[in-house]
Amino acid sequence: MFSYYGSKSKIVNYYPTPKHKRIIEPFAGSARYSLRFWQNDILLVDKYETVVTVWHYLQQASKKDILGLPKMVAGMELNKMDLSDGERLLLGFFAGQGSLEPRNKVSTMAEHSFNTTPNRYKNIADNLDKIRHWKIICDDYKNIQNLDATWFIDPPYMFGGEHYKKNNSTINFNELAEWCKSRNGQAIVCENTKADWLPFKPMKVIQGVSNTFTTEAIWSNYKTNYDAVQQTLQF
Image 1: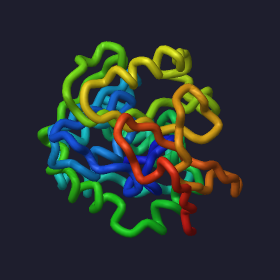
Image 2: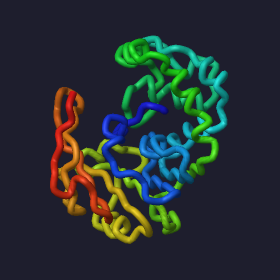
Image 3: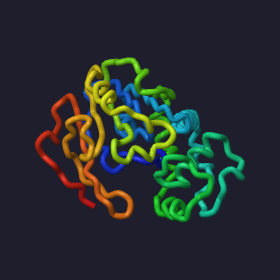
Image 4: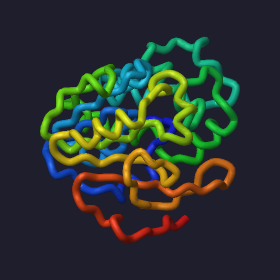
């Protein structure tokens, strides 16, 4: 529902379906997996307060609130507009397009993206009712009760996660690996093939910024379609 660094929007449909009614995302971000299976009992956890504030705003916003938001115009400064904190932070993520932190000034790229994406606000408004029942908290992944659930674990990556300046820059990956393996239920862990803190399997080749390509990888405590087969994302 909002733009965020590391979003799984391009590849969310390639992850295994949940085996449990409850879904927990301990590094929630823009929570694309939970949005795909929104009817489930969803728990989002993120230690970055800004992300949680945006989710809480969306959870209580009306369709009228969203449809009344200003359009992205290059050079527009959000702190000079009459906006609530939630509105300003939401628009701040759009202003930076896939950035880690909300930006105050709308970039030319953000204006172009807004104008070339049909019904941007309508799409958000149409999804609001899907998230009303979700539980969303600001906390560290280590503090989450180990419930029977589908755990969709999308942490800052071992190589690339250093860009996360606010919330997850000091992850001990050996410790995180043991935590992932100890989850009750189904664990789905996201990474790329450069990482070795779990025995990750190649999943999809994706295009990043500046026409660079990386191979998304997966580890799960259940058998997946990627245990022996590598596929290629078509553009």
